[in-house]
Image (cartoon, rainbow, N blue to C red; front, side, top):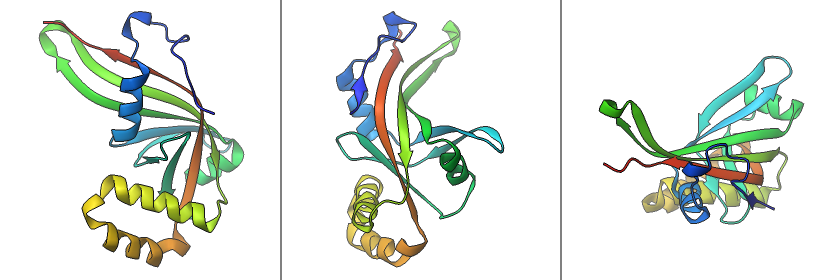
Length: 163
């Protein structure tokens, strides 16, 4: 179950409320998946994702690669989504909004869950091309890995400059 709590955020004056955090989670363009790999140490990479509207994110990838090795080593991962940013050069600062999610990554999902995840991704990134997207997903299904990130807890932070 995903628990939204900003209690551990050091800068309590920069909290992102849960409504804004939920909107960012739903509409964020991409996130950065960070994990630990026994072989290589810390590893992070930007990825497209889709949220199920409840407590899980889905990402897709090839069936082999470093992130899969890392998840096999340790399925505790972090996922960060950054929303709007605005550099304010004359004030030497940046406005921003971001969320950080602590998750458990799962593989070996059922075929139906994997297909539903691909549909969520198509709905998010290619809503006007859903029919073609679903045909493409079906065609590439056997060579596509889906990872579910079960959100355990998350928090949000922002900085707004009043000029």
